[in-house]
Image (cartoon, rainbow, N blue to C red; front, side, top):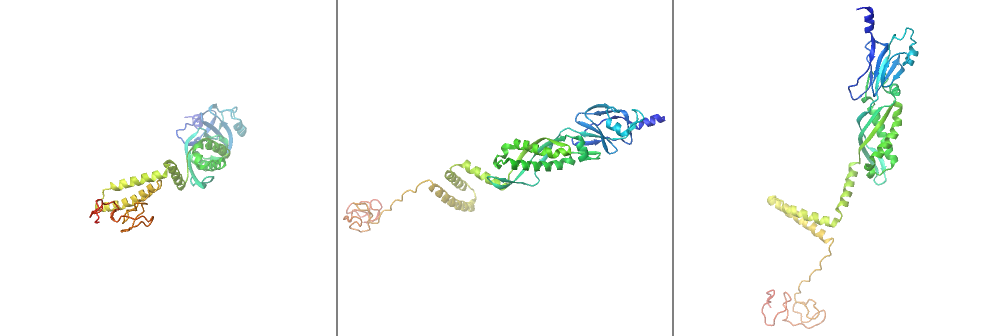
Length: 350
């Protein structure tokens, strides 16, 4: 092997990168101690950008396409190097491939509840979660501000920064929209679009941009949700009196069908009494109390005015009408025939 072959083995004539991962954002081309030959072939695929860095200074940027490296398409590198030995002179430079595709299905969520003032519930705390996607929009700014000289940079490096910016932007969007808490679910798309417009200017200096932002759920605190469930249940029930009657009747039926032996029977009887009282009270609410019937007087009733008579009374204390002593049973007030020894209705001895 001659000296020319040895030197040729130290030159790079093809530069390209194929990404087999889903989260690699930046890949530094491995020179392995070699130098790039002028006239080498550079292949930049779709969703990629190649950046040449010379001695720490950003030189040339190549968009998707195939290039033959020469002074014509590397003006910055040519000016920095000032080659004096023709187009085939080798040069050393760091080559970074920037992945500009969309990084999809990135999950976000509120680590801590977000405070919000609601017109109906007052001060409440909200939690939310969803997904988002983003991409590198400015490779040069991304190189300068984010990954620097890293040989490999993945989504994990910017995930935390983006999530916190998302939560902050969403909080501002909810507060400025003044949408009631009960109507948030009907405005997820509007809130998401508003949040994208508010968040992208904050990510632009980093060379990043949101391409989509999806709100899957915004949840209220547990105690507020319970209050809402109770209010909803009351609206569904409608007539509470009828519902109370139905519940009391169902409880009595369940108590009667409870097979618990003697102990269960005692408990069932106690429950039955309690439920019976509840049922009676429930039934008495929508209905008027039935008029009480008068118990028969001990001396019967006056034949003239119908007032009750005392036992053995000969005159009515209400109207003064003279009463027939043997015409009425003193036990039930039923009319009897003079001379009868017992009342035909109740058996009372006369």
